Image (cartoon, rainbow, N blue to C red; front, top):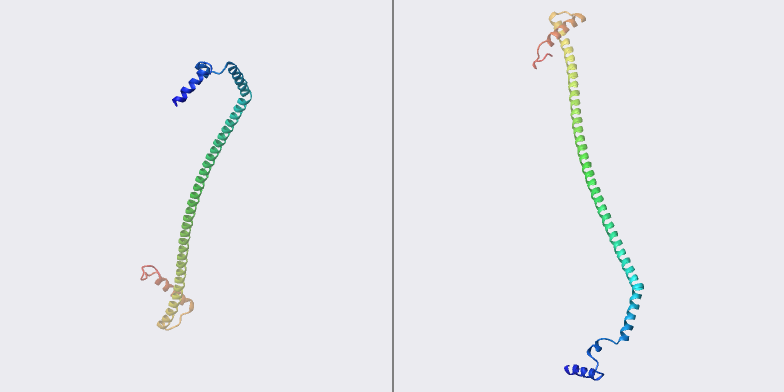
Length: 191
């Protein structure tokens, strides 16, 4: 490799005795044409290509910004819908709890009404039974009084030996019955 480098140096010295800077720097006409070409290319790029590239970059930036705003809006809408759904869910739970409590209250009221009605019916039945017992007792007392009156009259006829007329018999019997009914019975009450 060192022989190749030394061979290149010898070749350069033989070709005309140019210095080392001639090898690095191009010739002056090439330098001028290169500079003019650079200016023309730079001018064309600055007038045509760079504005289009800038416009394309701005469009892309705008598109990204719009998509980001859209995404943020969609996120806000989703959050709003989520909050609305949570609120509706809470309201539905509250409504369900209210309905359950209302049903419990209604059931309790129905239970109380049923118990009150049953107690009232029982009281009515007991009252009717008492009335029936009282009427049966009164009827039995009347029958007993009539039987006692008949027996008393028969007994009185046998004792007296003569027949009493109907009205005087009745007066005697009624007086006796009043006297008997004024006496205390076995229960401690008047008959």
